[in-house]
Amino acid sequence: MERKGPILVVEDEDDIRNLIVHQLQREGLTTRAASTGLEALEIARHTPPALVILDLMLPGLPGTEVCRRLRAEPETRDVPIIILSARGEEIDRVVGFEVGADDYVTKPFSPRELVLRVRAVMRRGKAPAAAAEPGAPSGSLEVGALVVDEGAHRVFVKGEEISLTATEFKLLLTLMRRSGRVQSRSQLLQDVWDLPPDMYTRTVDTHMKRLREKLGDAAGHIETVRGVGYRFSRELVADEG
Image (cartoon, rainbow, N blue to C red; front, side):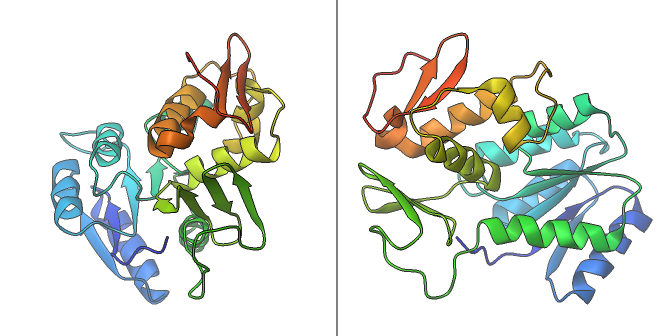
């Protein structure tokens, strides 16, 4: 689903914030800027952004909490979020993904690379202008009331479109493509988040919980296999996970 708002740049260092804004505007992208987490949340509530570039180390309210609150608000729960941080250790990336980020860029960064990452994340959730009405269009996966249009990056349940983040869409598509086969948390960490398979994290479970909530009546297609991971079933199952 295409988003119309500006790109919100949340960065407390003036030089970095101005550099990002300048680079985005050079590429023809509309921007808003904030230097604190509270300011960013206020802007996002009034004008839901198309995407958020979010520094982690902000004064007052840290970026992780800003991310959590954006994911908790109905107006911003599906907005793509790219975390920008000087902390590039694997555990820092894990924390970023656990709170709902779609991508993670470390400082120092290439402004041009950042723009490419922005466009890539936005493209995942953008439907073509001539997208078909829900049903079973070419290139789609259809299971019961659930339809996933891969080309348009759109998801429908009982004919109603639901909005997923880029990561949630990738997670659902990965499970559906491997229907009937158990996917371990380690495998999903590697394939969806590009994280080490032996990393201990709640990233998979956190995102799975949000995905199931959004799928509603179709959530029963995702089965928890205790002690192992998750499996997509073509039949609705009563899941206790």
